[in-house]
Amino acid sequence: MPEIDVSWMLEIVETAGKLALSHFGKTKGTLKPDESWVTQADLDVEKYLRSQISRVRPDDAILGEEGENPQPESPIVWAIDPVDGTRAFNLGFPIWGVSVGVLKLGVPTLGAFILPAIGDIYHTDGKTSFHNGVRLEPPRTQISSNAVLMVSEGAHSQLSINYGGKIFSLGSAAAHLCYVARGSAIGAFDQASIWDYAASAAILQVLGVPFRYLSGEAVDFSALYSGLPVAEPTLVCPIENFDTIRDATTYHNEN
Image (cartoon, rainbow, N blue to C red; front, side):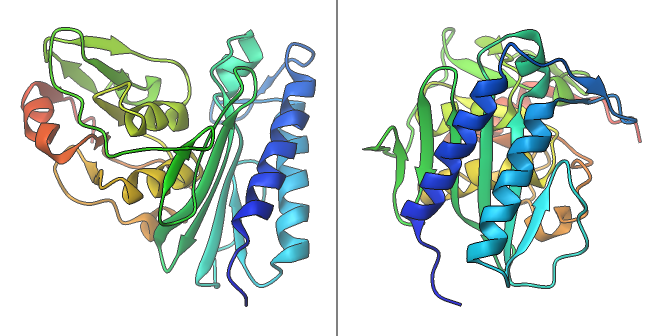
């Protein structure tokens, strides 16, 4: 198969973002058996993205939060979250987005994440990462009393954190990770699934930001193809801050 056309990838993600935005404030979600929310926007956006990817890249595998996900047999896997931050979307908060990541042989390589309600898009072509078309540089955020650490609701109940800065939770794991990429946040704790991580992990990898579990072990993304959330929270931050943040954190492992 030919290389993935990044311009085409951005085009379908931007169209998906417009489709999701057309539902914003007009649809109410329902609870799935796992107590997470799903809306008509989730279903319509994933259907659109699957159809576009399958049409252009029929040999690639696709994993999506709202669809059937057999174990991928292709070396190229697309991981789709049609609305990352469905709870925020459902309640009218603006921090939610469409996340599309590409993994090659289990490594996040390409990806885009769009936040339609605020007009932001992050992406990587595998060599450079961008925010609204402007090249991102490796983040060098310093730990201080005003440094922001993102903690998702998935990780919040598992952790006690006392690192001396500020803690934010905006409702979207992908958004949290993109704020780390642009240097707005010093790091992010999450406990999410492959479709939450794939695009942002590709963006961060280009910037030299490691994707690790709290234990320090690197995340094996191919092990997440089952769609289950990670068993242990991830801590994503510039390497020079990892030990300091980890040492200020207590993990209440329920297993």
